[in-house]
Length: 165
Image (tube, rainbow, N blue to C red; front, side):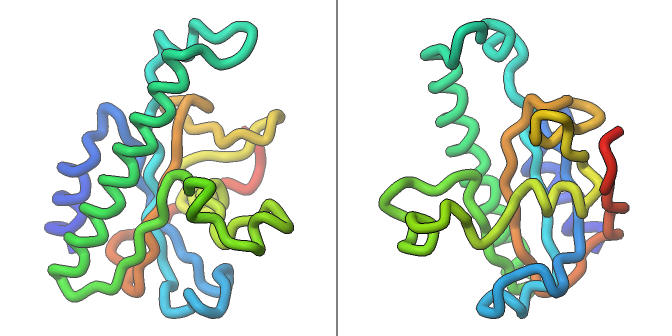
């Protein structure tokens, strides 16, 4: 499994990413019950762009938001495909879904079937702060999240952070 973990680290360089591994057993909807584990990705946002925000998002922030989401979506696909080469079932979950990809349940309840924040907390990447944002030790709240569900545990499970630090 160390080989897989090293390949994931190459896909998501430590300079920009926090990677966590978590147990999701019993937390997913029945149709995803074969996936007992998850990989959480937290991608650092550009401090210079975030520091420019004062009275609402800027055009630079919007561009960053979409670019990072695209990057995360690509990384989750790459990692899922990597795991499949090792015969490990994997299911990538995008950083965000487009309006056309959201189902009727979401449109009625504003709830998605999976919470990246929950997975990140369970993996030990971070905790929920006062403003309901995920806070990481290295990057603070300046992150975007994505996840991969797996049927096999490929690394030591992180220790969940259930209380604000």
